[in-house]
Length: 143
Image (cartoon, rainbow, N blue to C red; front, side, top):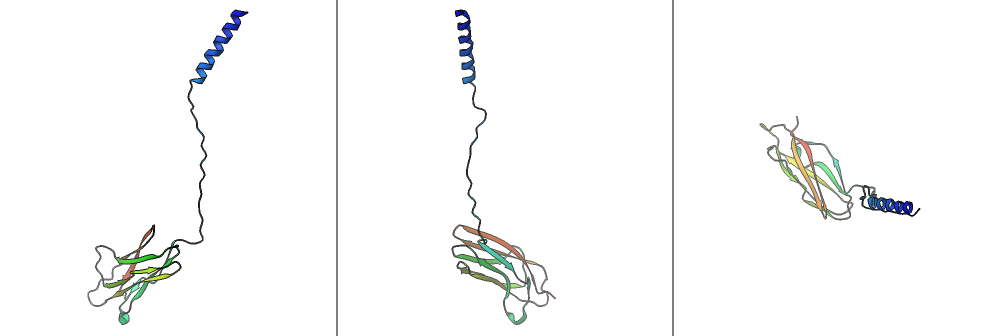
């Protein structure tokens, strides 16, 4: 009987050594995620008529930019690279407070020899931790 008890304890000890040396193969972790849902975007764009003419020499509104952020934002705009056109003046260097709207405008100089090609206008809105770029296509001097 002592022999059987000794053998049983030896086998049990070996079994404990083998199972305790086996590493963990799976780990389960839980992480919480918080997502904030808001009613409005930090910046809203409302594109207007993309046609820019030189009637009366006045500026034509291209896009309205509304500030939905909690901080003031600066709106800038410029013609896209490598595209000469009849558009001479783009106005957008404006700072807008929360809830305000700025309109990006352009003035065209139409006449003989002016190409009617689409002109990209790069609009940038920037502020504290926010930078949004958007390109709009305009058509200067349509028939």
